Length: 161
Image (cartoon, helix red, strand yellow):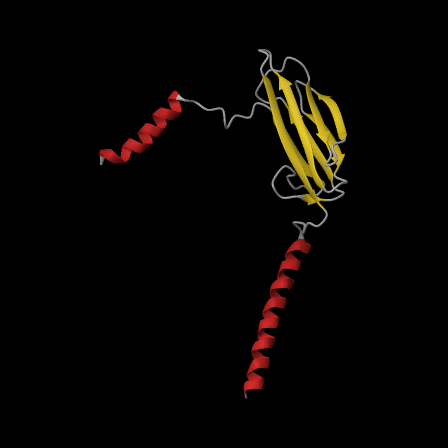
């Protein structure tokens, strides 16, 4: 019975000895498209949507205001601005080109350490939105496949009779 505690005990000891900051969020960047969907995920957003972002130095004491830049898929800078060191700073842009928009956010804390976030917003010309239209499209496609199967099955039975 003592062997079952060996693995969790060793893992716990390793986590205590070698702490990690992998789950810490020293600075925050949140972006949503105009439909309310999270825009920094792996799923693309629809071409022409407005992207609303919020930057914040959440768990650090920033020495000075931070910096954010948004670069479109062609490499042109859309936004280049300072972000407030002590409160949430909103910024927005229109995703008007297919490709990946890059967002770079950085702050420097009072000890001189730099904290950066690099995020991407993928933009696609064809996205089935998370709305009734997307659900209806999937149901219609499924029913069409089922209808085609039933038609072929009946058609084959008539030929063989």
